[in-house]
Amino acid sequence: MLDEAEYSRWISMARKTLESARGDLERGDYNWACFKAQQSAEFSLKALHHGLGLLGHGHSLSRLLRELRDKGLESGEELIEHAKALDKLYVPTRYPNAWAEGSPHEYYTRSDAEEAIRAAEEVLRWVEGVWRSLRREGA
Image (cartoon, rainbow, N blue to C red; front, side):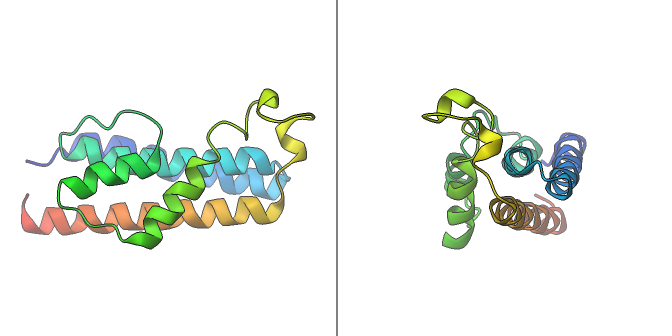
């Protein structure tokens, strides 16, 4: 049985966080745009987990996708690649000690942020498509 309310809470947060990432991109806050893109994708995948009654713990997008794959939801290799790229943005976008010197804002570019946002959009689209399909099937 699907938990529509829980899915909606998480997917709403995913959309809002992606919108915030786009704002950071426009302001030139590229490290934050990258981090928020990762967070948006994480919230998207957790929306699906929680909507299906699964735990959805942790921050690894590739692991969250593997768990969904184990439940029979095939994501494809391209989405796994997006997840792995976003996984790499969870810590170094925020913490100065992730770098030998300097601060995160010195290391991320507009291109990095645009790519992260595109990857998060793909994850969100996949989750929304899976959810629509599950609702039609009455899972």
